[in-house]
Amino acid sequence: MKSQQILLWVLRILAALIMVQSLFFKFSASEESVYIFTTVGMEPWGRIATGTAELIAAILLLWPKTTVWGAVLAAGVMSGAIFFHLTSLGIVVKEDGGQLFIYALIVFIASLILIWYHKEQLFCFFKKMLPAKAS
Image (tube, rainbow, N blue to C red; front, side, top):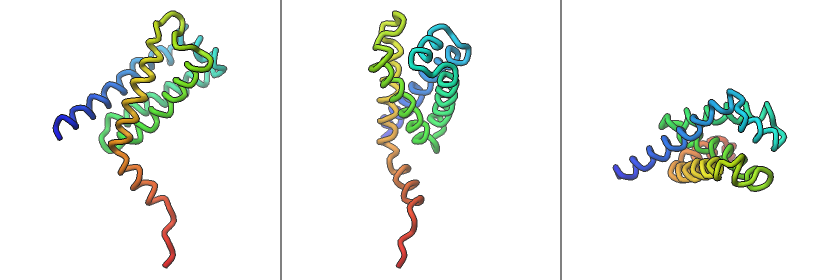
């Protein structure tokens, strides 16, 4: 059980660190970020919105009560990144050796594992959202 908790914390921290380290490049309008979001037709609003979503996801991932919501948000953002890598950007962007694509995959897979582990939280939330059955 303890090794499972350690693994879950490693996944949380790894995903959060990857997303947080990219924020400087998004928020400072680095050449590579501007190129990426221009290529996919989402510059500048997409770059800023993605950075904001990644910041929120990283914070949510690190707070145990909100980990599942951070994982859902991170998986959503990374699914978009993976989609654009596979459709318009390519695996390698500006000679990065595929590093950004690999980071997106790592965060996506870590998020899916965290979602799976915390799925009961999601089920309980959605169960509460359903209208009560009339007797």
